[in-house]
Length: 613
Image (tube, rainbow, N blue to C red; front, side, top):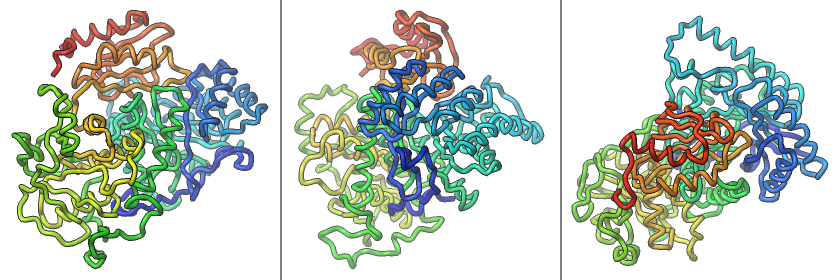
């Protein structure tokens, strides 16, 4: 199986077109040769028509091309008629997507008024009881027939009215049936989506796209890769467009880093026709990050901007004759990593610096330049979690051009890609890993966020996106034993960014990890305010993951591997979870944060501020 043409060259995946609305009147075409479409979601109550119209217009001004609105009930779905009418009378023809989880009846109502309906297969026709059950072949077939009975009417309605459908699977919200056969796994997510796609195709409906969202970027990347590979296996006419997103990414730098790792890495591999950056912030800010992230793809898929090169080029200081074209031939056995099952590239453990080791079972280490070290070292407490672990200029590191011949005498050398190459950074390190594998060398690899530097310093927000996409992509491949961030010009910022990337990629845990959903019309409390309150009391808890979910839809299932959960259960009432298990119910919102702290203490995960280092 394969998910892209090559891990070394950029080539956008060829898909069929999906039409959302009337392109001549403000609608969009997704896929084909069309640019990647940016979208976002409203945060207000769907029954508040005026506010829905206001927020939609605000998003359109920001550049949003598709707007999603939740429709949890038939009543909400019916009000989409008024929202759409309010937009159209104001001259706004942006396509509207109804977000449906549990009620097929609401989907049918919404399909009458909006250009697209999103359904979550795990919720749409199944109720989750987290029950363990073995299904016989006959029982499983009966379940599929029941799903078809629920979903086929929507497919027929959308075909008749010219609507589109998004088959949107979320990690953690799979049905009991899928969970029992495939587990809470990327394979389970893909099979769940394909079941619904087969129903659509059986009814001669093809105007749909897929999404495979997770709050864990590594899981999300694996899911999309597997989906695309499975679609190719199904046949050439299964080339449906893909919507990319890291769900519940959170806010601030952490939300942007997770999104850049997940969305950015897949875009650089040629996948993705629409994107949404899910932030626990005001929705227009999501569009700014979408735009910035899309703008980086040409730089990340070439040696420094412009059009993607058809063939790799050597360093400006080296002869092109030193290139070996055979290096770039892709065969079944030539991939430097398994794209569908994460495993860290095996290496020996070596001494990095001053007793710090890397490789083997060691955590991924953080290297800084001498200039950065000189600026930050005097300010760092020796017990701090965020600190340089080695200085680049002091390392005994072998710098390699993987596109030319090279020799590695033993596995105890730390290796990296040579600066100045005009090869894309991701491709260069993948090629290095493959060439080491060909030579049966297992040397630990030092990753860099860039190989060439801009003439002027990058804006911090751009440096963050580029470094996260490059290093995060390679870490998701299982490549990398130490990392070096240099494109961020601020010394302290570059050090912090390196650690934040490692945390977002699941490689290290040096601070509290938050899984926070973006707000929508289902949300039962102010997510931004509550998230800030929870962080104020818990952000010193290293190694603890807390999920903050506005409603039960993003509740026990989609919290995935969080240690504790704070979930809206009813207006003004909060339910608290330990893992996926609800522990305390209907806590008044005014008390809920303190009760969450009490729950953390009860389970031995609490430490007083200042005592966590």
